Image (tube, rainbow, N blue to C red; front, top):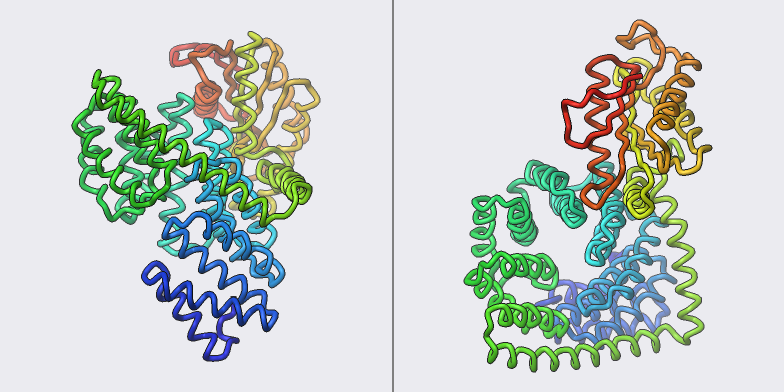
Length: 545
């Protein structure tokens, strides 16, 4: 928004709003009322939108729910008419955050999806990162771990492609990596979870502000509890106790501390639970967000029940019911206010249909690799878990292959990046040809790596298809003068793991095994295939081709 175009009387009011936000409610409200009146008289949609947005943000900070929704929803139309798209995104984001804290994830997803759509349409890459992270966290809270991984992966890829300041880069990166670590832990892949967490520590280290560091340390305690590493867990518990004070913005960190408290309760750290829970209760009471108070009381209820403290349990049960009633009243107010501002039910349905169509387009873009038009890693994440679960339920065979281009770095460095892209696209076209077989899925894993999933095929059938792929690429005889192989053409190496999925394994266990087999193939001889059948057995003699 171009504030410099306004005369001194308006600029002075804008300055008052910006400097008083969160400090002096009365000055903010009065100044915004004046700006809104001027904007309406002059037909200045940007000014009207700004006045309503800032007044709504002040109410957000004050937890004045009804007024917040009124102003924040009503700023959207003037901002859209004025083309102030960054504010449109930020308004939808705040509406999503408040909806999530009030316990209404569907409304939150609606707002976040709108914000993501606008961010993509108007090339607001920084905000696109933020919205992917927020949507990832919604999926994470709903237990949709593969979807969450897709969003966090998208955010990570965007982050690496942007010229961000340290104040943007490290918080965004921390949120993405901790999201990936959490999602892996929740789906039972503890090794991958620890790997992501280690990468987070290496990348961000001591560069995080207190807010983000507390989030990391809460999860560190949870992770090492799951890993059974008592010493490391206790180190993080000590850090959280020192970092979690009354100064922390609890609305932004609540879920992290809530999960941490649940871990303390489960692990029998009663004294630590009481300390952290008391601090949390004091903070959420100040926010007046009843859903957050209710969740803390729910933990207290479970704790008193586990300890057999009947008197405390009865008192907490009464408090829980009171908070539940109040929360339902707040939700009803929120819904009525939104419906009133959005118009009729038909209008709301039309808006939702538009968002749904928009999301379908976004979903396709988010899982498609631009160079090869194959599914990307996010698409693989979404598909692999579903495919593996189908195989468990049906008792079908399941295999996963990872392959890469031999000596691709030498190809790329000597022929140039454009030729390197053409080489990747060539191999991709050969890999995609496997999709002619039912139950075969292909994705670009990253760089010159590709992944193929074979659902419902015997090991001999999978091995034959992999050999056919290798032979087809060889037959094309694409020149590679800089390869260390005597053949001087483009070749690939392939690692495959085939087996019978069960509830004790995951798609990512199979992929990890395939990756190890690829490494063994490349170590022994490029332009080769290795296929294994036994998880965790490094002594197995794999099939070679």
